[in-house]
Amino acid sequence: MSVASWLVSKVKNWQIKREMGYPYAESRPDKQIAYVFDINKCIACQTCSVACKTTWTSGKGQEVMFWNNVETKPYGGYPLRWDLNILKRLNGQSWDKDGTYTGKTVFEAAPQGERVLGWLPGEEDYSYPNIGEDECSEIVERGDFFSGIHKVWMFYLARICNHCTYPACLAACPRKAIYKRKEDGIVLVDQSRCRGYRECVRACPYKKTFFNLVTRISEKCIGCYPLVEKGEQPRCVTTCIGKIRLQGFLSKPDSPRKDNPIDFLVYYKRVALPLYPQFGLEPNVYYIPPVHVPREFLYQMFGPGVDNAIETYRNAKNDKELLAVFMLFGSTNKIIHSFKVEKEYALGFDNSGELLARVPVYIRPYFDKKNGTYRHNIP
Ligand code: SF4
Ligand code: SF4
Ligand code: F3S
Image 1 (cartoon, helix red, strand yellow):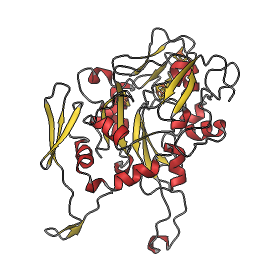
Image 2 (spheres, protein in one colour):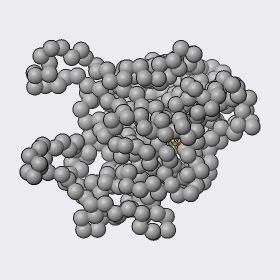
Image 3 (spheres, helix red, strand yellow):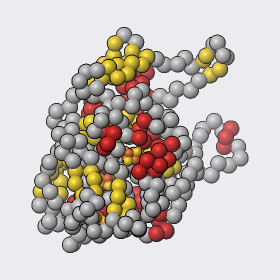
Image 4 (tube, helix red, strand yellow):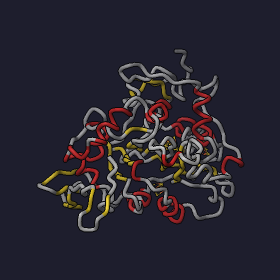
Protein backbone atom coordinates (compact mmCIF):
# COMPACT_ATOMS: atom_id res chain seq x y z
CA MET A 1 0.00 0.00 0.00
CA SER A 2 1.56 3.32 -1.02
CA VAL A 3 1.11 5.85 1.75
CA ALA A 4 1.34 9.64 1.44
CA SER A 5 4.57 10.97 2.94
CA TRP A 6 2.87 13.29 5.43
CA LEU A 7 1.19 10.31 7.18
CA VAL A 8 3.93 10.51 9.75
CA SER A 9 2.34 8.50 12.53
CA LYS A 10 1.19 4.93 12.70
CA VAL A 11 -1.85 4.83 14.95
CA LYS A 12 -3.94 1.90 16.17
CA ASN A 13 -7.53 1.87 14.97
CA TRP A 14 -9.43 -0.89 16.79
CA GLN A 15 -12.49 -0.57 14.55
CA ILE A 16 -10.57 -1.67 11.46
CA LYS A 17 -8.30 -3.98 13.48
CA ARG A 18 -5.04 -2.57 12.19
CA GLU A 19 -2.63 0.32 12.26
CA MET A 20 -3.10 3.18 9.86
CA GLY A 21 -1.33 6.37 8.85
CA TYR A 22 -2.46 9.67 10.41
CA PRO A 23 -0.74 13.08 10.52
CA TYR A 24 -0.55 13.18 14.32
CA ALA A 25 0.57 10.70 16.95
CA GLU A 26 -1.98 8.56 18.77
CA SER A 27 -3.24 10.49 21.78
CA ARG A 28 -6.42 9.10 23.22
CA PRO A 29 -8.33 11.31 25.64
CA ASP A 30 -8.68 10.36 29.30
CA LYS A 31 -12.24 9.41 28.50
CA GLN A 32 -14.02 9.59 25.17
CA ILE A 33 -17.52 11.01 24.71
CA ALA A 34 -19.57 8.33 22.96
CA TYR A 35 -23.16 7.67 22.05
CA VAL A 36 -25.24 4.62 21.26
CA PHE A 37 -28.23 5.10 18.92
CA ASP A 38 -30.74 2.26 18.53
CA ILE A 39 -31.88 2.73 14.94
CA ASN A 40 -34.70 0.24 15.40
CA LYS A 41 -36.48 2.66 17.70
CA CYS A 42 -36.09 5.94 15.79
CA ILE A 43 -39.37 7.42 14.52
CA ALA A 44 -37.82 10.43 12.71
CA CYS A 45 -39.86 12.88 14.77
CA GLN A 46 -36.91 15.31 14.39
CA THR A 47 -37.23 16.47 17.99
CA CYS A 48 -33.45 16.08 18.35
CA SER A 49 -32.83 18.19 15.24
CA VAL A 50 -35.10 20.95 16.50
CA ALA A 51 -33.71 20.80 20.04
CA CYS A 52 -30.17 21.23 18.72
CA LYS A 53 -31.13 23.91 16.23
CA THR A 54 -32.96 26.06 18.74
CA THR A 55 -30.18 25.62 21.28
CA TRP A 56 -27.11 26.25 19.13
CA THR A 57 -27.74 27.21 15.49
CA SER A 58 -30.60 29.69 15.25
CA GLY A 59 -28.34 32.65 14.36
CA LYS A 60 -27.47 34.38 11.11
CA GLY A 61 -25.41 32.27 8.73
CA GLN A 62 -26.47 29.11 10.54
CA GLU A 63 -29.58 28.48 8.45
CA VAL A 64 -28.15 25.41 6.69
CA MET A 65 -26.54 24.00 9.81
CA PHE A 66 -27.99 20.82 11.19
CA TRP A 67 -25.46 19.63 13.70
CA ASN A 68 -28.03 16.93 14.35
CA ASN A 69 -30.08 15.63 11.43
CA VAL A 70 -32.19 12.55 10.81
CA GLU A 71 -32.29 11.21 7.28
CA THR A 72 -34.19 8.33 5.70
CA LYS A 73 -31.98 5.67 4.18
CA PRO A 74 -31.47 4.57 1.46
CA TYR A 75 -32.41 7.79 -0.41
CA GLY A 76 -32.04 10.58 2.11
CA GLY A 77 -28.84 12.40 3.05
CA TYR A 78 -27.77 15.81 4.23
CA PRO A 79 -25.87 17.41 2.66
CA LEU A 80 -26.91 15.74 -0.57
CA ARG A 81 -25.19 12.37 -1.25
CA TRP A 82 -22.67 12.94 1.55
CA ASP A 83 -22.07 9.21 1.84
CA LEU A 84 -22.32 8.21 -1.84
CA ASN A 85 -19.79 10.81 -2.86
CA ILE A 86 -17.09 9.58 -0.52
CA LEU A 87 -17.86 5.88 -1.04
CA LYS A 88 -17.46 6.41 -4.78
CA ARG A 89 -14.16 8.20 -4.32
CA LEU A 90 -12.85 5.46 -2.03
CA ASN A 91 -13.58 3.16 -4.95
CA GLY A 92 -14.32 -0.11 -3.18
CA GLN A 93 -13.60 -1.21 0.34
CA SER A 94 -12.64 -4.68 1.48
CA TRP A 95 -12.45 -6.59 4.75
CA ASP A 96 -10.73 -9.90 5.33
CA LYS A 97 -12.33 -12.86 7.10
CA ASP A 98 -11.23 -11.90 10.60
CA GLY A 99 -12.67 -8.38 10.29
CA THR A 100 -9.51 -6.48 9.34
CA TYR A 101 -10.05 -3.69 6.86
CA THR A 102 -7.80 -4.28 3.86
CA GLY A 103 -8.88 -1.27 1.80
CA LYS A 104 -7.65 2.30 2.20
CA THR A 105 -8.92 4.84 4.71
CA VAL A 106 -9.65 8.43 3.67
CA PHE A 107 -6.20 9.34 5.02
CA GLU A 108 -4.38 6.62 3.11
CA ALA A 109 -6.30 7.35 -0.09
CA ALA A 110 -5.56 11.09 -0.03
CA PRO A 111 -4.37 12.47 -3.37
CA GLN A 112 -0.81 13.75 -3.63
CA GLY A 113 -0.41 16.96 -1.66
CA GLU A 114 -3.65 16.55 0.33
CA ARG A 115 -4.13 15.16 3.79
CA VAL A 116 -7.55 13.60 3.40
CA LEU A 117 -9.56 12.23 0.51
CA GLY A 118 -12.57 14.53 0.55
CA TRP A 119 -14.92 16.76 -1.43
CA LEU A 120 -16.50 20.12 -0.83
CA PRO A 121 -20.30 20.29 -0.99
CA GLY A 122 -21.79 23.09 -3.08
CA GLU A 123 -24.69 25.40 -2.23
CA GLU A 124 -27.17 23.07 -3.89
CA ASP A 125 -26.09 20.21 -1.64
CA TYR A 126 -27.38 22.08 1.40
CA SER A 127 -30.75 22.86 -0.19
CA TYR A 128 -32.72 19.68 0.58
CA PRO A 129 -32.47 18.70 4.24
CA ASN A 130 -35.39 16.28 4.03
CA ILE A 131 -34.84 14.76 0.61
CA GLY A 132 -35.84 11.10 0.40
CA GLU A 133 -37.76 11.28 3.64
CA ASP A 134 -39.96 8.22 4.14
CA GLU A 135 -39.13 6.89 0.67
CA CYS A 136 -38.74 3.14 0.35
CA SER A 137 -36.19 1.37 -1.83
CA GLU A 138 -38.79 -0.32 -3.97
CA ILE A 139 -42.06 0.85 -5.43
CA VAL A 140 -44.99 -0.27 -3.32
CA GLU A 141 -47.28 -1.77 -5.91
CA ARG A 142 -50.89 -2.57 -5.44
CA GLY A 143 -51.04 -6.01 -3.92
CA ASP A 144 -47.60 -5.95 -2.36
CA PHE A 145 -49.10 -5.09 0.97
CA PHE A 146 -50.99 -8.34 0.99
CA SER A 147 -48.29 -10.60 -0.40
CA GLY A 148 -47.07 -11.61 3.05
CA ILE A 149 -43.45 -10.70 2.35
CA HIS A 150 -42.59 -7.09 2.92
CA LYS A 151 -39.82 -6.40 0.43
CA VAL A 152 -39.73 -2.65 0.66
CA TRP A 153 -37.51 -1.14 3.32
CA MET A 154 -36.17 2.09 4.72
CA PHE A 155 -34.85 3.29 8.05
CA TYR A 156 -34.04 6.49 9.86
CA LEU A 157 -30.42 7.42 10.45
CA ALA A 158 -29.87 10.05 13.12
CA ARG A 159 -26.52 11.75 12.66
CA ILE A 160 -24.32 14.08 14.68
CA CYS A 161 -20.59 14.75 14.76
CA ASN A 162 -18.87 11.52 15.78
CA HIS A 163 -16.22 13.23 17.92
CA CYS A 164 -13.82 10.91 16.14
CA THR A 165 -10.70 9.51 17.74
CA TYR A 166 -8.88 10.44 14.51
CA PRO A 167 -10.84 13.43 13.23
CA ALA A 168 -10.39 14.20 9.54
CA CYS A 169 -11.50 17.80 10.17
CA LEU A 170 -8.65 18.26 12.65
CA ALA A 171 -6.13 16.52 10.41
CA ALA A 172 -6.96 18.74 7.45
CA CYS A 173 -6.98 22.19 9.04
CA PRO A 174 -3.81 24.08 8.04
CA ARG A 175 -4.40 26.58 10.88
CA LYS A 176 -4.57 23.89 13.58
CA ALA A 177 -7.84 25.55 14.58
CA ILE A 178 -9.54 22.27 15.49
CA TYR A 179 -8.69 20.42 18.65
CA LYS A 180 -9.80 17.38 20.61
CA ARG A 181 -10.25 17.87 24.32
CA LYS A 182 -8.10 15.66 26.53
CA GLU A 183 -10.72 15.49 29.28
CA ASP A 184 -13.63 14.10 27.22
CA GLY A 185 -12.60 13.73 23.57
CA ILE A 186 -15.03 16.39 22.33
CA VAL A 187 -13.82 17.91 19.03
CA LEU A 188 -14.12 21.71 18.80
CA VAL A 189 -13.32 24.49 16.34
CA ASP A 190 -11.35 27.31 17.95
CA GLN A 191 -13.33 30.23 16.55
CA SER A 192 -10.52 32.69 17.15
CA ARG A 193 -7.98 30.64 15.15
CA CYS A 194 -10.25 29.64 12.26
CA ARG A 195 -9.73 31.64 9.05
CA GLY A 196 -12.40 29.92 6.97
CA TYR A 197 -10.18 27.72 4.81
CA ARG A 198 -12.94 25.07 4.71
CA GLU A 199 -10.47 22.19 4.56
CA CYS A 200 -12.38 20.74 7.52
CA VAL A 201 -15.63 20.80 5.56
CA ARG A 202 -13.94 19.13 2.61
CA ALA A 203 -12.27 16.50 4.79
CA CYS A 204 -15.02 15.32 7.15
CA PRO A 205 -16.53 12.33 5.35
CA TYR A 206 -19.68 12.67 7.49
CA LYS A 207 -19.96 16.35 6.50
CA LYS A 208 -20.48 17.47 10.07
CA THR A 209 -18.46 20.67 9.93
CA PHE A 210 -20.39 23.59 8.47
CA PHE A 211 -19.19 26.88 7.02
CA ASN A 212 -20.94 30.00 8.29
CA LEU A 213 -21.42 32.32 5.30
CA VAL A 214 -21.90 35.36 7.54
CA THR A 215 -19.01 35.00 9.98
CA ARG A 216 -16.85 33.23 7.31
CA ILE A 217 -15.62 30.62 9.75
CA SER A 218 -16.63 27.03 10.45
CA GLU A 219 -18.77 25.60 13.20
CA LYS A 220 -19.76 22.13 14.30
CA CYS A 221 -21.50 20.10 17.02
CA ILE A 222 -19.93 20.97 20.33
CA GLY A 223 -21.11 17.82 22.06
CA CYS A 224 -23.13 20.14 24.32
CA TYR A 225 -19.98 20.47 26.41
CA PRO A 226 -21.54 22.93 28.90
CA LEU A 227 -23.99 20.16 29.83
CA VAL A 228 -21.44 17.34 29.69
CA GLU A 229 -19.17 19.30 32.07
CA LYS A 230 -22.06 19.35 34.55
CA GLY A 231 -22.52 15.59 34.26
CA GLU A 232 -25.57 15.91 32.00
CA GLN A 233 -26.26 14.27 28.64
CA PRO A 234 -26.53 16.45 25.50
CA ARG A 235 -29.78 18.05 24.32
CA CYS A 236 -30.25 15.74 21.33
CA VAL A 237 -30.06 12.80 23.74
CA THR A 238 -32.34 13.98 26.53
CA THR A 239 -35.04 15.31 24.22
CA CYS A 240 -35.25 12.09 22.19
CA ILE A 241 -38.89 10.99 22.11
CA GLY A 242 -38.12 7.43 21.03
CA LYS A 243 -35.49 7.03 23.78
CA ILE A 244 -33.12 5.64 21.17
CA ARG A 245 -30.03 7.40 22.58
CA LEU A 246 -27.58 6.92 25.39
CA GLN A 247 -24.53 9.15 25.89
CA GLY A 248 -21.65 8.25 28.14
CA PHE A 249 -17.91 7.73 27.96
CA LEU A 250 -16.11 4.96 26.14
CA SER A 251 -13.03 3.60 27.87
CA LYS A 252 -9.76 3.09 26.02
CA PRO A 253 -9.94 -0.11 23.97
CA ASP A 254 -7.35 -1.87 26.17
CA SER A 255 -9.16 -1.12 29.44
CA PRO A 256 -12.92 -1.58 29.03
CA ARG A 257 -15.19 -1.71 32.08
CA LYS A 258 -18.05 -4.17 31.98
CA ASP A 259 -20.25 -2.07 34.26
CA ASN A 260 -19.93 0.97 31.98
CA PRO A 261 -23.08 0.81 29.81
CA ILE A 262 -21.32 2.22 26.73
CA ASP A 263 -18.35 -0.19 27.05
CA PHE A 264 -20.81 -3.01 27.65
CA LEU A 265 -22.71 -2.35 24.40
CA VAL A 266 -19.69 -1.51 22.25
CA TYR A 267 -16.83 -3.73 23.48
CA TYR A 268 -18.51 -6.60 25.33
CA LYS A 269 -21.77 -7.26 23.47
CA ARG A 270 -20.64 -5.64 20.22
CA VAL A 271 -24.29 -4.84 19.55
CA ALA A 272 -23.56 -1.20 18.64
CA LEU A 273 -21.33 -0.46 15.63
CA PRO A 274 -19.52 2.58 14.22
CA LEU A 275 -20.81 4.30 11.08
CA TYR A 276 -18.55 3.62 8.07
CA PRO A 277 -15.59 2.36 10.11
CA GLN A 278 -13.68 1.90 6.82
CA PHE A 279 -13.23 5.66 6.54
CA GLY A 280 -10.67 5.25 9.34
CA LEU A 281 -11.70 8.02 11.76
CA GLU A 282 -12.74 5.74 14.64
CA PRO A 283 -16.09 7.54 15.00
CA ASN A 284 -17.71 7.49 18.45
CA VAL A 285 -21.40 7.35 17.68
CA TYR A 286 -22.32 3.66 17.73
CA TYR A 287 -25.44 2.31 16.05
CA ILE A 288 -27.55 -0.73 16.72
CA PRO A 289 -28.27 -1.73 13.11
CA PRO A 290 -31.86 -2.03 11.86
CA VAL A 291 -32.91 -5.68 11.87
CA HIS A 292 -35.08 -5.57 8.74
CA VAL A 293 -32.66 -4.11 6.20
CA PRO A 294 -30.77 -6.16 3.54
CA ARG A 295 -27.45 -7.24 5.02
CA GLU A 296 -25.29 -6.08 2.11
CA PHE A 297 -26.43 -2.54 2.70
CA LEU A 298 -25.66 -2.84 6.41
CA TYR A 299 -22.21 -4.41 5.87
CA GLN A 300 -21.22 -1.42 3.80
CA MET A 301 -22.54 1.00 6.38
CA PHE A 302 -21.45 -0.64 9.65
CA GLY A 303 -18.74 -3.13 8.71
CA PRO A 304 -18.44 -6.86 9.29
CA GLY A 305 -19.90 -6.89 12.83
CA VAL A 306 -23.49 -6.59 11.60
CA ASP A 307 -24.55 -10.27 11.85
CA ASN A 308 -23.34 -10.59 15.42
CA ALA A 309 -24.95 -7.28 16.41
CA ILE A 310 -28.36 -8.24 15.04
CA GLU A 311 -28.24 -11.71 16.54
CA THR A 312 -27.32 -10.25 19.93
CA TYR A 313 -30.05 -7.64 19.66
CA ARG A 314 -32.69 -10.20 18.77
CA ASN A 315 -31.61 -12.25 21.76
CA ALA A 316 -31.90 -9.34 24.20
CA LYS A 317 -35.10 -10.75 25.63
CA ASN A 318 -33.04 -13.66 27.03
CA ASP A 319 -30.17 -11.49 28.22
CA LYS A 320 -31.16 -9.63 31.34
CA GLU A 321 -28.06 -7.46 31.56
CA LEU A 322 -28.42 -6.31 27.97
CA LEU A 323 -32.10 -5.64 28.42
CA ALA A 324 -31.29 -3.66 31.56
CA VAL A 325 -28.93 -1.35 29.66
CA PHE A 326 -31.57 -0.82 26.98
CA MET A 327 -34.07 0.15 29.68
CA LEU A 328 -31.67 2.83 30.90
CA PHE A 329 -31.84 4.69 27.55
CA GLY A 330 -33.75 7.91 28.16
CA SER A 331 -34.20 7.18 31.86
CA THR A 332 -32.28 10.21 33.19
CA ASN A 333 -30.76 13.44 31.89
CA LYS A 334 -27.56 12.69 33.84
CA ILE A 335 -24.59 10.77 32.44
CA ILE A 336 -24.62 7.14 33.59
CA HIS A 337 -21.12 5.90 34.43
CA SER A 338 -22.03 2.45 35.68
CA PHE A 339 -25.01 0.11 35.90
CA LYS A 340 -26.12 -3.06 37.57
CA VAL A 341 -29.14 -5.36 37.64
CA GLU A 342 -30.81 -5.86 40.99
CA LYS A 343 -33.72 -8.26 41.09
CA GLU A 344 -36.13 -6.98 38.41
CA TYR A 345 -34.59 -3.53 38.13
CA ALA A 346 -31.85 -1.82 36.13
CA LEU A 347 -29.88 0.70 38.18
CA GLY A 348 -27.75 3.50 36.74
CA PHE A 349 -25.13 5.43 38.73
CA ASP A 350 -23.07 8.60 38.27
CA ASN A 351 -19.26 8.73 38.63
CA SER A 352 -19.46 8.98 42.42
CA GLY A 353 -21.79 6.01 42.74
CA GLU A 354 -24.98 8.05 43.31
CA LEU A 355 -28.12 6.35 42.03
CA LEU A 356 -29.50 8.21 38.98
CA ALA A 357 -32.14 5.86 37.62
CA ARG A 358 -34.05 2.76 38.63
CA VAL A 359 -36.25 1.19 35.96
CA PRO A 360 -38.00 -2.17 35.74
CA VAL A 361 -36.50 -4.75 33.37
CA TYR A 362 -39.69 -5.83 31.74
CA ILE A 363 -40.96 -7.14 28.40
CA ARG A 364 -44.58 -6.38 27.63
CA PRO A 365 -46.67 -9.45 26.80
CA TYR A 366 -47.38 -9.82 23.10
CA PHE A 367 -51.10 -10.00 23.80
CA ASP A 368 -52.61 -7.66 26.36
CA LYS A 369 -55.51 -9.62 27.80
CA LYS A 370 -56.94 -6.69 29.72
CA ASN A 371 -57.27 -4.44 26.67
CA GLY A 372 -57.63 -7.18 24.10
CA THR A 373 -54.78 -5.79 21.95
CA TYR A 374 -51.60 -7.07 20.39
CA ARG A 375 -48.34 -5.26 21.02
CA HIS A 376 -45.18 -5.05 19.05
CA ASN A 377 -41.80 -5.57 20.65
CA ILE A 378 -38.93 -4.98 18.28
CA PRO A 379 -36.43 -7.85 18.78
FE1 SF4 B 1 -14.57 16.06 12.69
FE2 SF4 B 1 -16.40 15.04 11.09
FE3 SF4 B 1 -15.26 13.46 12.91
FE4 SF4 B 1 -16.95 15.35 13.67
S1 SF4 B 1 -17.48 13.56 12.40
S2 SF4 B 1 -14.92 14.91 14.60
S3 SF4 B 1 -16.59 16.97 12.19
S4 SF4 B 1 -14.25 14.43 11.18
FE1 SF4 C 1 -26.52 19.45 18.99
FE2 SF4 C 1 -25.55 19.07 21.40
FE3 SF4 C 1 -26.53 17.00 20.04
FE4 SF4 C 1 -24.22 18.14 19.26
S1 SF4 C 1 -24.60 17.06 21.16
S2 SF4 C 1 -25.96 17.52 17.95
S3 SF4 C 1 -24.59 20.29 19.85
S4 SF4 C 1 -27.70 18.78 20.77
FE1 F3S D 1 -9.39 25.33 9.59
FE2 F3S D 1 -11.78 24.71 8.80
FE3 F3S D 1 -11.33 27.05 9.81
S1 F3S D 1 -9.91 24.23 7.77
S2 F3S D 1 -9.25 27.48 9.22
S3 F3S D 1 -11.17 25.16 10.89
S4 F3S D 1 -12.66 26.60 8.10
